[in-house]
Each structure stands twice: as structure tokens, then as C-alpha cells.
Amino acid sequence: MKSAPTIRPGRTFQLEDFPTESTAGFKDKDAARARLDKDLERLRELQHMLYADGRYALLIVLQAMDTGGKDGTIRHVMSGFNPAGCVVTSFKVPSEEESKHDFLWRIHHAVPPKGVIGVFNRSHYEDVLVVRVHKMVPKSVWKERYRQINDFERTLTESGTTILKFFLHISKAEQARRLKARIEDRSKNWKFSEADLKERKLWSEYQEAYEDALRECSTEWAPWAVIPADVKWARDCMVARAMVEKLESLDLRYPKPQTDLDLIVVK
Image (cartoon, rainbow, N blue to C red; front, side, top):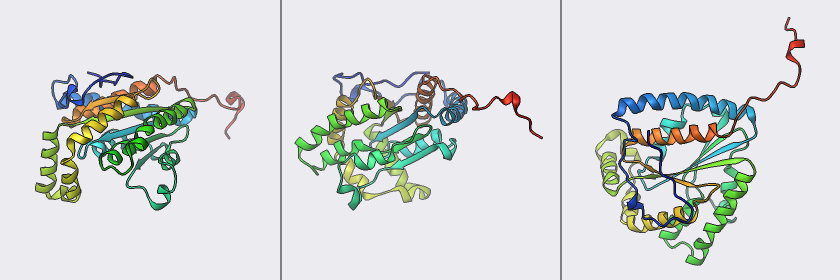
């Protein structure tokens, strides 16, 4: 299967350079589903090893335009994890207490401990995206945050947290289809918000903000992967495969018993 393209540090690009519609090399949905099932089973094994090993944490960062598929990715790729070793955090508008601290304060509180997989549904990148687009702070403030984010992520990686950052890349046409589905399908009505239509009018501004964020904050220690997300089942396969490859690269192992088990007798 095809791997998700990764933003090379310092690369000049536009998001329109990346496809939004891909089948990840699979001939059809059934073939993709078979591969995904194998990868999900492997992920469950690796999660158990990560938890037992206790030397590393894995942080998954999911960002996307509205309707981009963050919730769907979590549901289809991460829902099989043991809840004891996986924590999903959704970042909304900062609370009054959170607003009294620096923008990374609430993020650091949610970073997974060693042995645990943490999933961020939106993240610290909102502070160089929505904050920028809606001009909540001056340019001099949000522009400095690129460096602060890179320093923060480097500190995490040097402390044992492996970071995978996925930008779920959908087209404007696909977003329109998904918004219409939320209106027409009663089971999806609850997902619809008029605020999504207001944000859609700022599509170009958000694309520019994402391009800068991905360019400035794709580093050797925490690169961004751009996931074509118009085809949901292909999206899930690419995310799962990237997670498997990253966890396998950590050389996870079960710790040795603290006592000689040959001397233990269970009566």
C-alpha cells in the first residue's frame, strides 16, 4: 500500500500539490478492509507491549478542516485499544482557567505518560490556525508560536514521547458533500452546526494557515504526514499503517521478571 507523504523540513509547497482522493494502492474497499484488520490486530499487540515496556509514550496529533474525519479516524483506528493505555483528548475553546496560562499549558497537561497512547483531536496547532484566521492575537504573537511548538515537541521526544502528526487533507468539494449529508441524514443532524458554514467561507485563509503551520513545524523529531482523506477507508489504512511502522521502530519488549520464575511454585 502507499504510504502517506511526509512534509520534509524546510520544504516549499502548497496543499493543492497533495492529492485529497486516494485509494492508497488498494483495488477496492474490501482489500483495504482486510489490510486494516491485520494492522489493527498488530496495533493491539503493540499497544500491549508499549504499556508493558513503559519506556515510551506515543502521541497522535490529528488536525483537519471541519468534516475532515478526525472523529472517524479515532473511531475506526483507535477504538480497539485497551482504554487503560489510551487517552483521547479533544481541545475546544480554552476555559477561563486555561486562558490565564500560556497556550501550551493545557496541552502539556494532556500529554500521555510513558506506556500510554495519547490522541489529540485538534491540538496546540489551533493556536496558529483558528487564532490566526480570526485575528485573535497579533501576527507577532502567533508567528512566534511556531518556534515554541517546535521546542515543546522536541522536549517531548527527548523525554521519551514519540509524536505522529496527521493532517487529514480533504477537498472543498468533499467538505460540501459531508456538510450536506449532515443536513439530509437525520442520524447526522446532531453533527451539523451553522458555525461550520461560517468557517467554510474562510477556506482559503485556513489553507494558507495550514500550509505555514505544516511548513514551519514539520521537523526531524516530529514531521507532519499529509493523509488524503476524501476516501475514508483509505485514510484509515494509511493512518493505521503509519502507527504500526512507528511502534515497531521503537524496539518494544516485555520487561524481564524481577524474580527467578523457575523458583516459584504455585500451590
